[in-house]
Image (cartoon, rainbow over all chains, first blue to last red):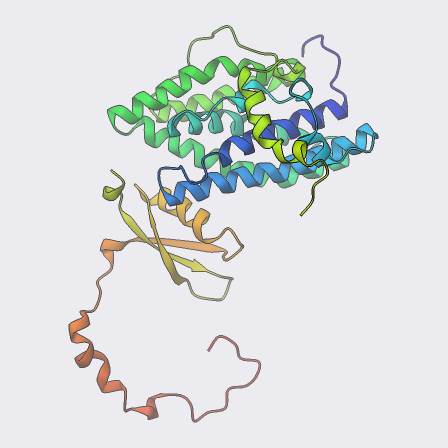
Length: 240
Length: 94
């Protein structure tokens, strides 16, 4: 455990909600563009699972904040620097292999994070984590099998998945900052085992890129939000 | 590329006690991938509690040209239908 002050329940709910919301949007960008119909639906399913998680976490965050903001207000009417998602989830999809590596890295982390959260004193958070845990278990399995299949596939699929691992590795450190540092050994053991099956290794340590948790995001988030928030920005309060 | 991905026939058991029924097919490179694809394509609205996938090539089909020989003789044998019995209201799935 680092010396950083404990995360407030509000910050934690925002962080977990924003992670899920942003990755959900990224996955739904695949809609209509995935390699096959089966994968198209699979990615949308995962995206919708994450959107559901985001709604629960952000609704809870709105309640903790007590300023009358609901999940929609937090999702659609906050500025870029107010988002607390990690940098990993806002990274562009790249090719299918990179999307799968991103999913595998993130879902493996989420699985451990929710496992810990299920014991939370905050009953609402514990309930969300318990429900979402089942979804995440499938996300881990799905993405891990693709990482293995691609790594153990053709020369091209292997190159692409290795590129994905190397590119995304710099964003992994941020997942284990502050009170989440204790999750790292378990994550590395699980991720390393899957990569080994894929004929790959965990990369050597690099200087991690961080900042998302404090609202310092990569240039990609602004573009994503411009698209995601367009309707509520143009027609505030629109409902249908 | 995609054209070389094997096809798998998908069977879903809607609930315990019912048999698996054919619902369609998916493309997948291997069996575990086929189960995942079937899960994502055919059970996203709670359609099932169990899945089977079978390589399409493993199915031996009857020849449409044999239809007369195979199926026509059954057409005039109404006595083989259990329509001369009253099915109790509480018996489902017959």
